[in-house]
Length: 91
Image (cartoon, rainbow, N blue to C red; front, side, top):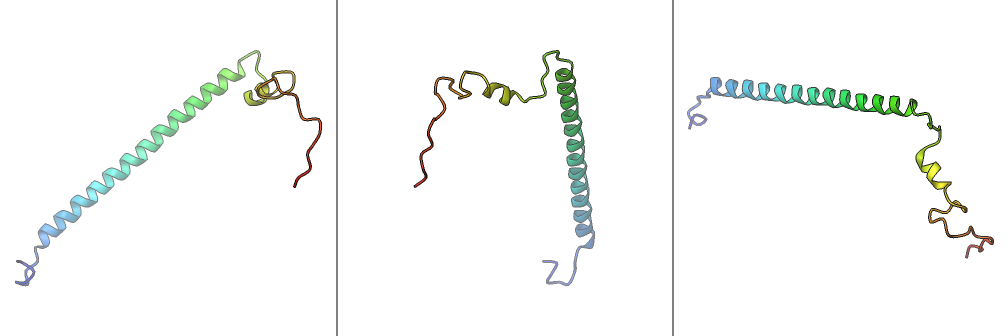
């Protein structure tokens, strides 16, 4: 029981602190490296998608969701229902 004898093992405490700091530094470097790597991958995917859509001769400035919504005679997603002709009053 070193605490009751008045003797503190400073060498053991300092070794533990240094090891913990080294581990924290390694984890921080790993996290930063992962974020940089994943952002480079994301930018590369974005650029390749942008280049492929820009080179498409049938490229339209409208989003695919808007183009899909216009399909069908009524504009209804199911394509079979007609739009309402009368609006019901709110209660």
